[in-house]
Image 1 (tube, rainbow, N blue to C red):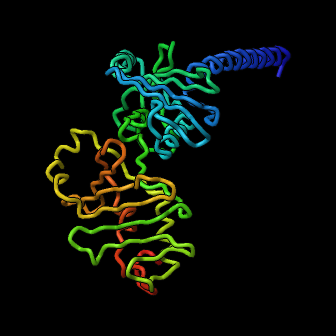
Image 2: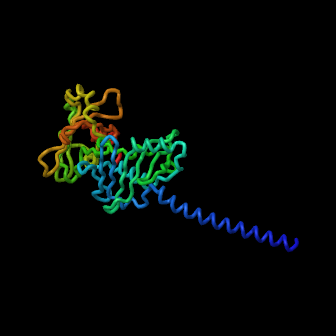
Image 3: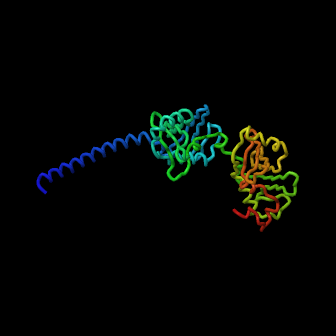
Length: 327
C-alpha cells in the first residue's frame, strides 16, 4: 500500500470511531430518558404502605398497610393476604414490553382516559408513582399503561407470565375482603357443636377439659384426634361474601333450616361464633354459609376446608380411616 492509502484508512477508522462515540452517547442519553418514562415497577415493595385505586365509574378504594403482612381495605375490612401479595408482586415484576405503535397510540390513550384505572403507590407515606392501567392487547398477553404526565402509552407485562394485568388492579370490596369464620386458638376453645338437622346421632359436641377434649357420649374418643380437630378452629376462612343481588337467587334455600350448624364457644367470650351451612345444588365444591357476624352476610365457603369440620362421632374412634388421620 502507498502512503495515500494508509492516510485514507486512518481517516475512515477515525470517522467510524467518532460516529460510534456519538451514537453511544446519544443512545445513553435516550436510555436515561426512557428509563424515567417507562419505569412502572416498584423495586422495593416492602416500603409500599398505601395503594390508591380510582375507577372511572367513581368507585375508589384505598389499601393501607397496617402491619408487615396485614392490610386494610378502605379502613374497614381486612384484606385477603393472597390478593395483596399478588398486587405487590405485580408492582415489583411488571416491565415494559414495547411502546404502543404510533398507529394505535391515539385510540389507546382515549381508552386509558375513558376506562383506565388510576393507581397511586405510596412509600413511607409519600407518593412514589402514579400511572393508569387500561385494557389488553389483542393476544391478551400485554396490558396498556401510561405514567402520569407522559404522552406515550406502553405495553406492559410480567416476563414469563402468559396473561394480562388489568384484573390485578381491581380491588372489588367483596372479593378482596378476608372472610373470617373461626379464629379460636386451641387453648381458648371451650366447646364445638356440629349439629346435623334431623340427625342427632350424627351430631358432635366437643368440650374442653383440664386434660384435653372429650366428645359427649363417647368417652372412648381418640385424644390425639380430638386435639387435632380442636386445633382446626384456630384459622378457618370462607371464600368470599356475596353481594345482595348475587345471594338473591338463594333466598328460598336460605329460608329453609340449615342442614349443618357449627357453633364455637371461646373462653371469656359471651357470644359464640356460629355458621349455618347449606349445600349448593349441583355444586360439589362449595357450600353457602351465613354467620351471626357481618350483618349476616351470605358467603361462599369451600368444602375442602369445611368437610374437615363436619365430623361425626365415629370419626373420633381410634383407628378410624378418616381425614382426621392427617395431622
